[in-house]
Image 1 (cartoon, rainbow, N blue to C red):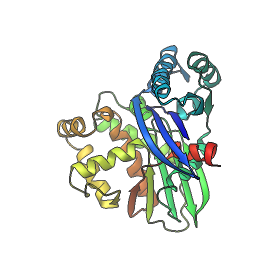
Image 2 (cartoon, helix red, strand yellow):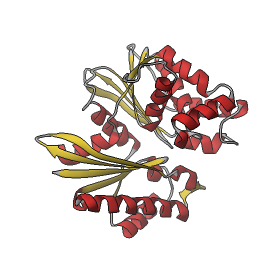
Image 3 (cartoon, one colour):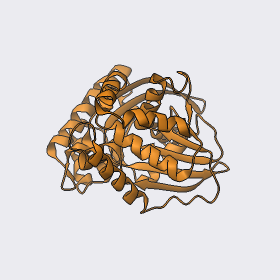
Image 4 (tube, one colour):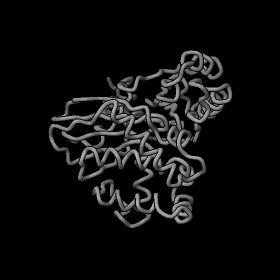
Amino acid sequence: MKYSVIDIGSNSMRLTVYKVKNGSFKILFKDKRMAGLAGYVEKGCISDRGIKRACDLLLEFKSTLESFDITERAYVFATASLRNIVNSDEAAARITEETGFNIDIVTGEQEAILGYQGVMRELYISDGILIDIGGASTEMVIFENGNIVSPRSYRVGSLKLFKDCVKHILPGKSSKERIKAAIEAELEKQPIRITNPYNKLICTGGTARSVFKFARYLDIIPASSNMMLARDLKKVGKFLTGERKEAADMILKVDPERIHTIIPGYMILQSIADQTGAKKIIVSNYGVREGYLCRKVLG
């Protein structure tokens, strides 16, 4: 049986089609569109243009799903893109009316747990810290012996930081200082208190995968590796936050869609890596969409 999951994120919108059989699943198809919905938030509300942007992309996805003949088995959820705004109910209702998709707005804690459940379908790690850096929020799960200890959500993300702190495309010295201060202020609201040392920081989401792309491009890690050491992460950051012309050229070669968000996203990742003292950073191909599929279909 085929199912699809659509994730309405603050920076991107993603469609994944799965084949589900005997309690397991296989990814058949993926599609991603950069929506930038966090950039359409004005005075706490998503604008009409932002709602139209979401509708237009969902209708494109719907056309794709019609070719798979699985429009009746499509699940659509929204994260911080609709969760962290004043007019979330109104926006979701209008999107449903325009597209026919029912929109499930998940809480920050739910998103963190779903991300963990999705990642563990691939990695099977018993102890560590999981983070998912999105466009407008960052989710975290501390887990021990295969059990969630502390799920949490921070209202800081790569696109939100760009919008709030950066004047040009790439951040200069003052912008980086503003980004750093914003990250620190948000993390202080739910301090990361580690009673036991965790060697592994598990990452999911577009920002983390992009950071690993840069690490591979720079030959810091092998092309097939899904793991880097803490010192490797700092090496990536040295290039990303170094001379702006060199950084811009590299970003345009490796991941041009993220030219405005990769540095703020990297700075979130580096800040959390520093605070947790992680020695190894591991990236997963699975995440919140796979967790949502498990919750809705596999139980």
